[in-house]
View 1: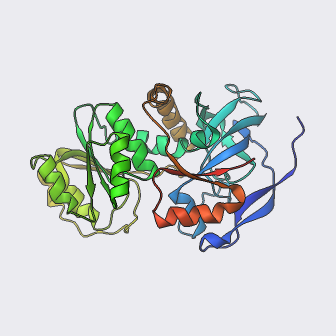
View 2 (view 1 turned 60 degrees about the horizontal axis):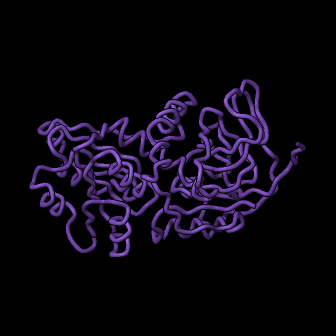
View 3 (view 1 turned 90 degrees about the vertical axis):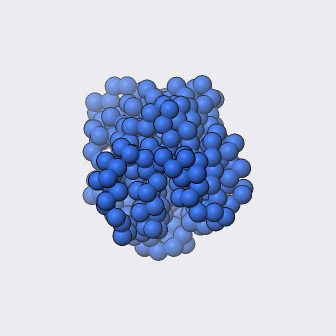
Length: 332
């Protein structure tokens, strides 16, 4: 198969708003040792893409400068040392950038088989959220069957995945949303309790739901003023998993909660982690999450699909927070 040497991909022309995303001619990547080249059918859109575009998410020196952290497509070339996949195999992948393009490199160990029955847009919406939730909610925060979890931003891509995985593993799910429509969306996904934070104080609601015991785990992408309230919402020996800072990375908190209730605070981001670390997460996702996808216990709610040339519109929608589920780019 003869591959082109150049492609029309979405580039960030300068730090700024969505309008800085422009289709530009770029060289087709060449897979290095242990890497595969994927002909991309669809790419997921995520908050880190927006932060990178705005100049607020530093790109590792070995990463592609192009945005895009998750893809679905067909392998068209193999780098030296690849052994699991062959040219022609359909995969989904967590990428080190470069997903907003017709061709993208990915490390072979960060690729997973494209789940049967999923469309390209559904498959592309899986890797970033599945890796993030599996690692932060279950590996780091050790959410277990019979426990109660508070998930903020339940209607987001991360939130919708976290709700379903927590329910599938026997946890009671409480989540927060900002509208009646998002409340209905989360209830349909299986959340046991959905709190509209615009209509009531979510901490008071959590305390009422749990009879003042609190929750075992908090998955937080909001931070800022939520941090203190999250610590108060946790039960003794609770775990606080922090994955983003939508309302700011700084907060004033009373750490007496941590000592008094023996709390654990943890957090992580995916992109700076090593190839080996992300490979370990991929193995965990394949063994723990992929069977749930195959059994229909993890659906992929895709809110809207945009053609690659309309990446700016996709970012505008992402930053409006109007979406429920995932936003995806389609690449013919």
